[in-house]
Length: 119
Length: 119
DNA sequence: CGGTTAAATAACCTTTCGGTTAAATACCGA
DNA sequence: TCGGTATTTAACCGAAAGGTTATTTAACCG
Image 1 (cartoon, rainbow over the protein chains, first blue to last red):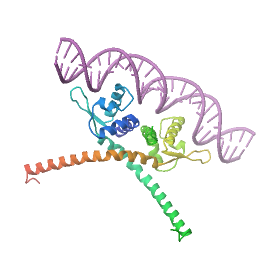
Image 2: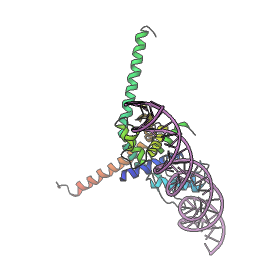
Image 3: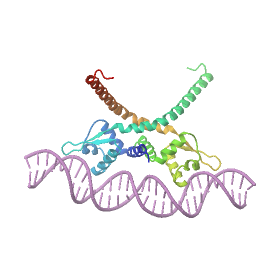
């Protein structure tokens, strides 16, 4: 399978879990230790540890070392692949929204025509 | 769990499978029957049928009816949620790329300084 | 060294996923 | 109404996902 495909598999499946997205959101605010990351969740530390490993394998985070702590740091550049993939489809939904816009404008035009004196 | 979160779960996990992304890519070119969609894959029809169901539950496609066929049609608007989610992180990787750009420019500046007469 | 703290690994369990084959359903056309 | 075509549903299977608790590893500190 093409390498870009593998990367997308890993990225999308990493992002499919709400816990992992919440972790990423937290890390977007800055580097943090595993315990701090785990605190908001009703979940054991090993569970968080596994989530971090999934994010790491997807290239979405990197790990550091600070005494006993292994702080995690976001690597948003891994999301560029998702953005690139989306590009193919962006024009499709934009076209769709344009048509919706046309429709709404048409509705409004008819409205004005029906009640030309309405405030 | 917040509804937007559920939707993102469904969308991302639907997109995590390469077969489903390939199906979407095909559907971006136009509405197609299940058999036509299945043709390129070394996979049984029921397998494709299941993938289509996943895509449908994620709101990424809709199904129609044309005689015996149940053509599938892409609904790219379901991807807007992904695009919106990405927005939070886009500034992070853009900042990162900016810094890379700065670094490259600095490299080039040093290069020019070292060999001011080079072609 | 010995105790404490932070995190990862191991072993295990249950549920979901992605596939299969076989049977059922829905529609068409003679 | 019967036979063919397109697709879904049912039942099953193995592997992967996501969680648990118990154990191990790694680093600090007195």
